[in-house]
Length: 302
Image 1: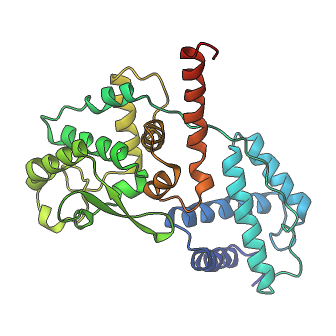
Image 2: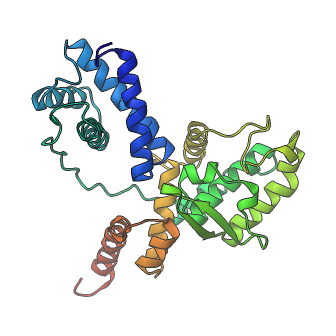
């Protein structure tokens, strides 16, 4: 059986993903993305009459160019490059190939893009939009409140189990990227919505005692990321917010509003669960920009 057979390729992909998952402590979402990236890459190589074990730098660059031409974002290209480079390094270090064709592949520079920020007034309009007289509306209200109050990633929120709420109902025990745990405070408004959702609506779902997940549909099934995204888009439209709003924008708003109201950067870093302070610093650019505009507007020599 040759090294280029599909079954062998699949074995290498699985071995690589197991290896890189353990070595770099990657999330399940990243591993799924890597598997998809490699399958598309190897399919492209095969369709262009190449064997993945025999490609050179030119072939890999041609593939990346074809992905860029198809409209793939720079951030996705960066992930694909990281994946391909790691894959070929794995093959080389384990003596499956004689040389590493991806060694000199460069990452494109990613333009620093400031996130879309929702104003405090827009947040108020968004949070008041769900119909809390219905079970789904109360659940949606609670989701929106927690995303903004606690700055959660959507994956963190949708994976919350009831036992992750502390006994005094004031904190959430969150498992973030790389399995890192952190305690996140729940604001008073979010806490009120959370208690109402749990005690008045969630408790009425069939077989609820056998369900660990906090946020579920009336059928007892877990809410998907896509459903949550559509829900937020619906309420943003109903609130006349003319911006492309996603769950992550509420996390951005959480960080920016904290900084605008005097929070220090390291505290915000801890609340967000960022491993590096530099990741959090993008929000200071937004806060500083608003300070400059404020100074220009109100200072006599601004």
